[in-house]
Image (tube, rainbow, N blue to C red; front, top):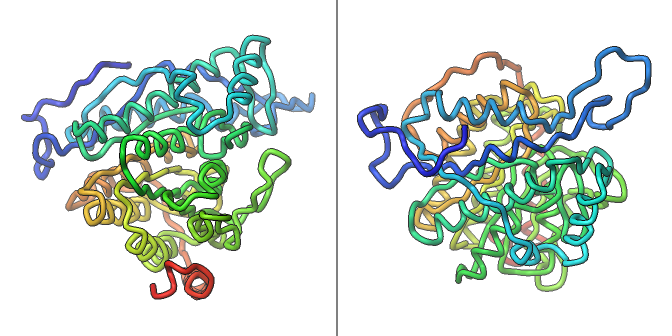
Length: 393
């Protein structure tokens, strides 16, 4: 399934395809499928002894197989080029992670299967997949930094945005997006903004840049709070950074069931003005389809239309602030089929296509966005009062 750099012939491109050189570069390696977090009751790995059928861990290879296949064979295929990722080197990992933590992972891999924290299992094949996920994300970032293209998507697993500088968390071993941000900073980009729409707080990425003012981290997520010793951050709106970073971590915890209109309102009222004030030289768009209508790990009720709209907003911000340059990094999304559809819609939005290429196969939910809008308005008022660079948004 993996291939080196290739693209669909121009003759096959759909009407309205972007000019040559402006397509979306997908970075992928099939070796990432080797990570297997096992079976149990949902993500616990536990067998109670009285169930005939146990769940595959939600972060399993099948979810990503469908993401790959819909991009290769779906109607978006003519807009994409495919590039092979490579494993990260240990020296690259310590830009975000502590050397002690990396050594801990190396030793854990050598000693056999290990549960690192709740829901997070390092099994045979996991460490190699994690190195490929990190390296593939770095390859996608280099593609942009070296001027080979403006839009790159790191289709990677295991995910990374919960991985903190010194420990694993929430299915994540290495912080793929955080490593890419450091590469951009080291390559001369003075300011980078990260927008994370996975249904869970991107706490690991936030922690890595919590005390710096050259990276703005924004996370839209459901209100889930802490979930144990590996994830002490709550994702609340009062976690805004420390020291030099005070005001540069912006959390947007949205009510359950916020839906398409609620997310669009939050993007326009909170994310857009914050990015406009920060003026980043590069955008990193961290995506997870677990905010969707049918995801077993989230409750936010987004449909394909909502993902498409968020993608369009992010593309507009990239055009305005970073000459159209945007790195997209895959995180969660656990419904085996619908996650792939929502990914397709997100990338349609980032490509700013005139009309949807795929109809939504299943989603309908009568949403009530009014409560979410009230919550967003309160957060905006708090930002204006407590965060200096946003006082006049």
